[in-house]
Length: 355
Image (cartoon, rainbow, N blue to C red; front, side):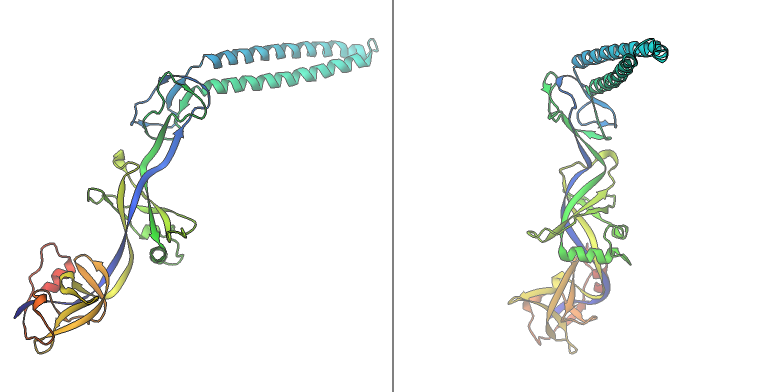
């Protein structure tokens, strides 16, 4: 029987891990007013880019303007009382020294001046508070980002507990995913040449993001956050990656698959996936014996590498592996091995093995 064969190659094989990730804004801010009142204007377009300090909403300022005027009036009264107290002290000081008036009268006037000074300070603070409250009628964005849909319409009565909208910084954008304890340790070993720190050595581990439509995102990411502890219920630890997001193409709530190279297996034996069969729970590979007969090898498979399997045991490097007519083969059957043609879309290692 004619059979197609490939040579089991030995190569350095990168092992990658892949995890499902959820996208979220790098910074997410809920916009809440610091003043109570009726909403009279919305100054931004929903879904648009807003800048830090930009006015998003306006609350009716008339009650706060009246409070400011009242505070300014009280400040004027306090300043007038202070001026009068100062005049009394200036007038009676030489009279008290000449014993023309009682010393106790001057002491009372000095005390009244101190009280007037304290009243001016209180009134000035009230004016500053009133100005601050008036400024709070203009609800501003605290970050630069994309503003979401308004949750409250113009004309509604809002309070400091109301959430008017949300603003998210989207460039860069975060992707949250969870990895197992063993994967975390593998990444940590690969990241740190000396420090064994996943965060500080993360630049050595480029992350790729595959979007929900199967496209690979063109920008690489890096690890920016590792949770402080492992989740004892799931056995996983949460990690956040940062990806550049020019044009704000990616949005919070999307899903993707994050991939990273966790380790490299040196001199790994690599064979095509089609060469592997299963018999009674064991993985088997048919190879060509010295006298052109079939030999059945029970193998231990490692990670997948493209269209190939890494063989961790049971098969030496350089063995001729049969890749077709596997259902017709049996131990010791005579065969005529023929070199296999390279398969379309096969990985470079598999194509080289085919040649």
